[in-house]
Image 1 (cartoon, rainbow, N blue to C red):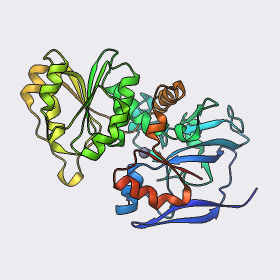
Image 2 (image 1 turned 180 degrees about the vertical axis):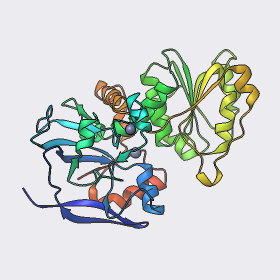
Image 3 (image 1 turned 90 degrees about the vertical axis):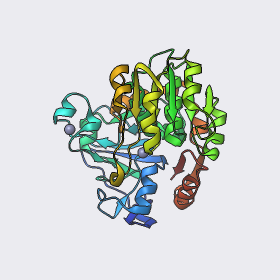
Image 4 (image 1 turned 135 degrees about the horizontal axis):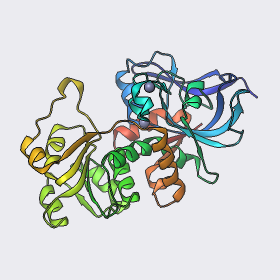
Length: 349
Ligand SMILES: [Zn+2]
Ligand SMILES: [Zn+2]
């Protein structure tokens, strides 16, 4: 085996390099994976442009990876070379009050791949002992394409919001924001049984991009009355669930008017820290007994469910993995994301 490999390495804001680095060694409690796909997340683009205080450079980027197990450490049980794996990549401590309740995504000591640990934009990555011990490695059935499996991590975050929003079969779900995560939320809502999925987006390019997914209704709230459309679609009572995947105050505040009594508003996105406050109609929440929840990241259980959905074949994974490029094309990937042309760019080392 060769001793060096190509990797996308973060050095400083604006300074990301595709370079040769040593192939990482695999300890007795670790698994080394031969990566064959790693999707590029919006947070990777943010890190490139603005840096991230949680990353100590140099660090190999990428947390949405998949690959085949190449080496299994001598003390690791339950894995064999050749198996395809993905991860719940924010690795939990396994001991804190949140981990003990199974809410590993809320762990007080999260250590994510590509932040704390070296990431997956490389030919090989090593899964740390803590991830294996705490159940963060999820197997993918044979036959699932690498570029589809790489969607497990972002999709698992949408599985978390479907879960936390209590989407039930037959529900009407409104998703506000048709960026990559809005579309993934809408896809997952449909997969878990929503009867009507209404997707709202003010950006015409993104709205157009959402068309082939054939959701029940696409709405441009700048041109049409979203609330009226939702009311008309639900016999005048409102949606069961509204998921806001747009980092803007207005749609987050207005979402309480889109749901029925006892409906759920899920904030999938937050606002920038510098301008983080919302004004929400207390009367709509109080008299309507509306639940307002947030969701962030995902647990291994959500990743397992995402893998199931991908393997099931009805999820439009080919459309979601809109661009497949080489590892060296990372800057092209950033361009495609910034211009809104790409939903998910998957890099194949
Ligand atoms: Zn991500
Ligand atoms: Zn913990």
